[in-house]
Length: 243
Image (cartoon, rainbow, N blue to C red; front, side, top):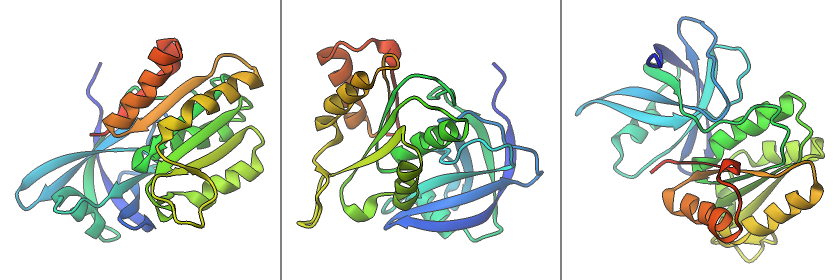
């Protein structure tokens, strides 16, 4: 396969998604449409003081035929790359390489889907979900999104709006360090994955597929639960880790 293309992108918009997470709206400087599959990622080439560095980020937006896309960056204490991107001013440019990756879902895959993500691992899942709903996907889809605190629920208002608008989609959150006021799911996402999978099975429409993204420990735990304990075929389990 040929190497992915390299191009310059400009920061056209930015917003804070949660404490420590900044969303970057990037656009190709040459105006060429950025073609990718939902779930893929890009590398950003950063001119740091200690030398050029590359950082990989999942694309958080769905393909729309435009020259732009979105990523979400968690600021890491002492991390030069994430600090650079959190301080990047509007109008600044960086180089990008991509798209890359095989963690993808066809917009109208037609099978029930359980999406499991933690932290910014939700970003490729957001891309898949928005792409599927825009394409008219009718198969049931459930997102299980795990974070430490309620304030860490990235894209909360958007996901709640999608849940209200589309009867085949719902977003659920599991909080590992909840406040006394929290009435939803608690604990790690792997404690809820089996029951949500069984619910999708009961809805019919074919065998469900799992799309899981996050830190290796969580991804491994969810993958082992389905494949080793529940006997789910490996072809139905799709995963990506970012550590």
